[in-house]
Length: 397
Image 1 (cartoon, helix red, strand yellow):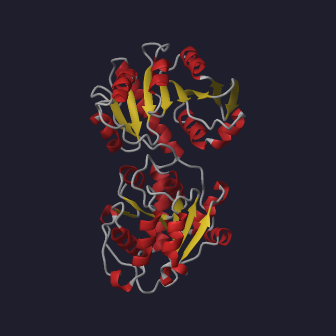
Image 2 (cartoon, rainbow, N blue to C red):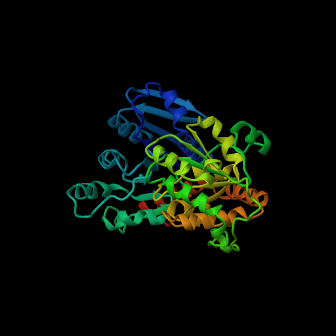
Image 3 (cartoon, one colour):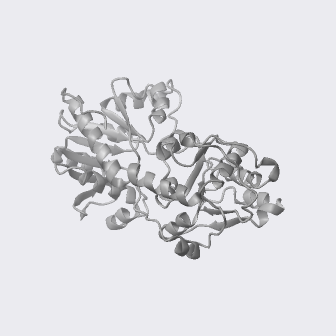
């Protein structure tokens, strides 16, 4: 089976194709994963770029060119399936379809596209026409496709499949080394990673952390994924800490003010700022708990990396995070609800953290590796191709 992966988005400041591949680990990771998912799979990856180039990496050929040249290159490859990254390129996706053989299937994967808006807008009327050429759509969670159905941008005849957006090659470090390298301490050690903006909602997380340590709140309870027994953060964890790693600083002043307003938080919350990605394994491996306050996400790369390193997720109850955790590890809480987050922190903080960390890493190996994702993607491709050609579909992955 021949698969052409197409990527239109890129940082226009990049001038070297090799540098782009180094930067976009999810692009190369997906290409490599599907190329190794089955012996009959051949992959060509097409990347829009300033200039033309051909690069081969890990057995996969990458073609760099303008989007019209990419469409012609895809047609020459005679693919069984073309996989386009992103729902935000309807015109280019339609142009990609034009030169392909009728037997070639076209699949588009969501990458945090969000809500497309009202079905009656003129913009969506045009998009609806252009998107008719697509055979199937991929989302991290099936619920993420619902706004697109409501806007009539995805028709009933077009199939929708759930598959992880990406995985990670990050690996856990020995606990002692990780704590030494990161400076993360605490029992439990709670880690937050993300942009300091309204969607990531760091203020709710800080509020929740303070409440979780407050005697008046310690007896509250929280639903745990998998039906585990609820619990509360105990009096014997006086050294619990919250470490915050962040890039964008939209809410930094507000976060600092909130911390300074609380005698308890002053000594418990550490603001680290930006950390190079190659150092993040130490932070994830040093943490007992990984807390996230996002209201909306397409997937969750930091969450994926945290789980790979064994940090127990205490994350918001949104479709992408339910898919990643499988509702089997950690705890879920309602976005914007500091009390619910505090109860979740208390529940997880009262567990056998060593055993829970191992279960989290086992979950990653079982459900979230590139190997697992690649095999699922290829099964979906085969199903979509067979449907387009009028043959029997593959059994569900």
